[in-house]
Figure 1 (cartoon, one colour):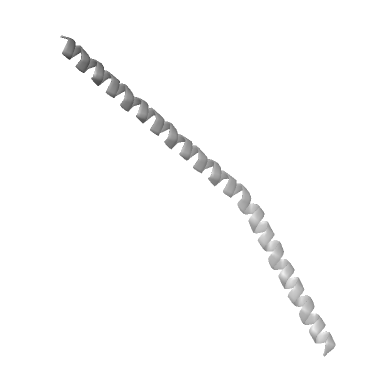
Figure 2 (cartoon, rainbow, N blue to C red):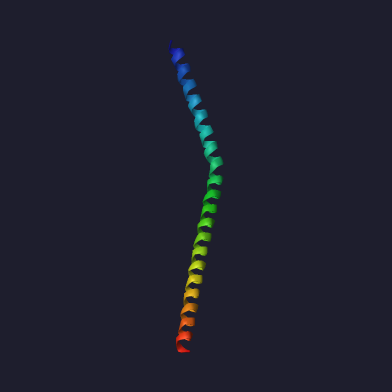
Length: 76
């Protein structure tokens, strides 16, 4: 009877060890993928910020040009 429980415990430990090892391998395989996805998100966010900045500059330039045009019309 004692042999049976010892074998069952060893089998449970071996099984748990294999599951732990497989999980570790899976996590190590996912790490580069996650780093790549994070870098792609950062690039995407930088592009959106650059677009917003350029858009804002364009709006300001247009507003300045319109003000200058209206000032010229008033002076004339």
